[in-house]
Image (cartoon, rainbow, N blue to C red; front, top):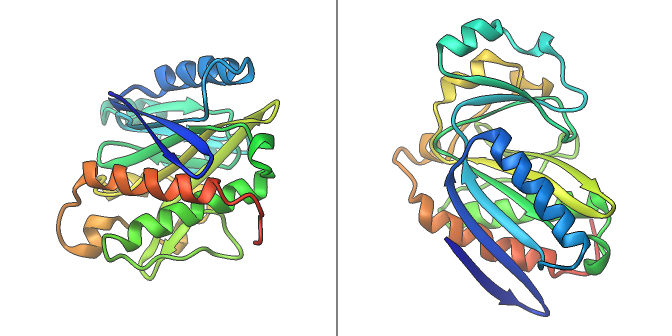
Amino acid sequence: MLTSSRVGLATLDVRDLGAIAYAEAMRLQDSLVEARLREEIPDTLLLLEHPPVITLGRRGSLSDVYVSEQQLSRRGIALERASRGGLVTYHGPGQLVGYPIVRLRARQLTVPCYVRALEGAIIAALSEITIEAHISEDHVGVWTRAGKIAAIGVAQRRGVTLHGFAVNLQPDLSHFALINPCGIGALGVTSAAALLGQPVDAQRFKGLITQALELELNRVECDR
């Protein structure tokens, strides 16, 4: 499904891909980044879920994965290398993943300001479902009183972003125990469903995160 919406002067096209394998999503991002560089598409947001997969960022180490690749395979969990920044993370059903393909210079955004925009959008969307969340001055991502609820890992290619964010709506939290998430697993991981005591309407949340992200990306001055 492809939709688009407009806030302010910029258009963000949103593609809801449903469930898609990690490697397939990476190939799609590569294609869209090149298309964005050629000005063939506007800034684009991919929304999706991955089948269970552990990904190693550029600084990631297998020492942060507590079981072997064979054991992961028996559990139906893949292991992939990623070109994003950061360490080790997990993706799976019940987690909303967003990959924005955004031309930073056109929005007068630096990479740090862009990361703050992602964090701000997630916090705003979570507030709409009555979850209080915040940023940490020490760690990238979005946090709650019970631990980390959203991970962020980005990359950019000639000024166009790829990779992005993952919000824990209602994933299997036990899978996070197989890794040291982002190298700071001791700080805890939680989900919206765990905090609310009930499942989250994922389709509604997609709309909330889209609106919030458009608003954040249209803030041309980075004041954080």
